[in-house]
Length: 553
Image (tube, rainbow, N blue to C red; front, top):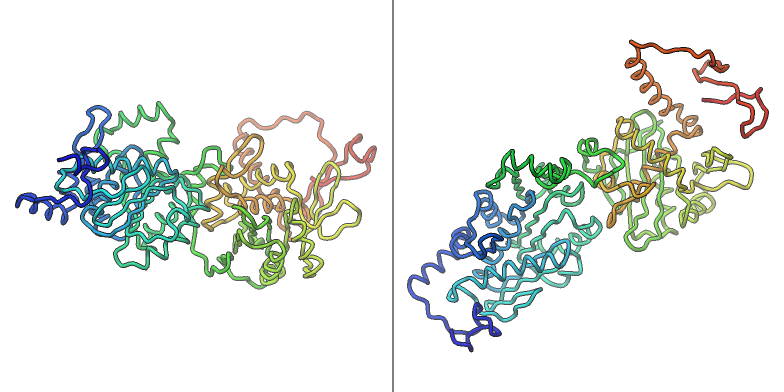
């Protein structure tokens, strides 16, 4: 090919508007390729092998099945192990699509822009190795986009609403979608999905290795249950040639069993060092709410004579944080989540009205608000402007720290709870016990998602970078509240005591063969008619020499 027929000095690329004379065999071959993407990929796509350089793409059986699914279905979601050639098979199909379909737009999106550009680079390499007679002439060719003379274009970018805003696409490919932060993933679908769904032939291809219970997990789970239009494809690591039991054992030895479960067994485990154990997180399942409007998801309508409690975490209404609250039926154990609210745009001045409406609907529910920041303003409005009566307060009680009540005298009282390190520590510890011992039932997708990324950082617990924990903190506040004396008095329900009794019975059963030895140092105690154990207060405590007083245990 003459120099004036090649694109920008690249001998492997044909310039636009170059006349091509097809032989009868080439015409027949072109038509065959246009009708059969698998044939095209097998015969003409080349890839780079670490060992052998540029070689033909010899697809595995499961890769052929994936191409067939892409071709026959508008919406596809695939769950594949690492290093299974998932990106290569998709980009090969996209290359076929833009060559044989004029005037189409394709977006290659990944959790990071360099990753998306790297995939476009693979596609470009395959394009350069096509015969010149099969190529479309090049109009634009760079690291972030390709434009062909048939009017088709490819764009590579990070997954975000702004990346494709204002453009219409025939195919959107989302690579490693499970690693896109949930808030960005939700914004993306809210912005882009209406445009995609409006067409009759537009396609969405979502491919990833699992990474906790996020939007990718939700789409996958709904596809399994037939609740959306996505065709789901799952590939097991053993379907990749060369991977057997010996390979599995070697991989685990070089990494870890948990890492293998996530990256190769494709289990939807959360982050490492989560507050709730991975084994428990795997068992948590979400339901669809009865109603969902304006950020409020209702799972159970109010029931007459039932007790309800609402815990609230307030955001500033900016950035990625949500203002959130969770509504619990606390009538009996296990407690049940019956509603939840989250909204990143609600202003603190408007939030109290929503809390008050929901709390009133749920039998004048008790409300506990975290008041470290703008939460104090929300609590003030709810108490004084809206005159809501069942707002819980906290008072400082010496070494006991914050104590919950509903009206105290004195100056150390606030309308809600301040999230101190002590409160958070107790709340997290109790929450772990409540969830793992099935003392609280949570069936909300957003909350479960946050729990999978609620991890230990230093001496505390918080969301993994790029994730949210506003709803998780509502649970932490509730768990702290549930062991407060005032809460137990309101509900006549002592969870801590019940859990203690269950644990003690288990210990008694284990230790029965050995018995217990008395040291003769038992302290003076008595049991009241309610079954509570009381003991004499020790001298030298915070109350001084008051051995005549009794303290509850």
